[in-house]
Length: 195
Image (cartoon, rainbow, N blue to C red; front, side):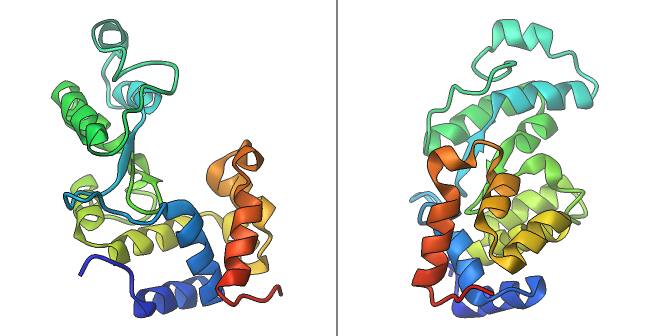
């Protein structure tokens, strides 16, 4: 079974020291309904600007690939195709450099970037990828690991300071997509009471 269970939500809430409603709120707002595509592969978004950075980090000069594959290696974000086509983009990028390509995707229901694999405690990039393919419970565990290494993010989640959490998790433009108000509404919907 790939979908989240009440046990998954409780375990995550206990690990983070937050109400279950807070975990459910983040899940509802961030996951867009599922961590998996209809064909069973995890939801991903390939980031071509991250691929450029990861190639350089992995010792490869990105400029030649920017010229030959601007849809896969580029200084500017974009080029998204959505759904299964993101896996097609990943497959093409992996032909350039597999590790950089895998690190350049956001993965699963919580869209955690692949390049975080080591910081959040996976023994290898492949172990991280395997977890993302396994089930949404593993994807939720990845989210827990990610929040735990970001103390201000964890503190905001504990206080249900949705604006601070959304800014930390989604970036400075969080208000454009009303992440903070959607998180607050979802928290209340799931029975959460402000601390």
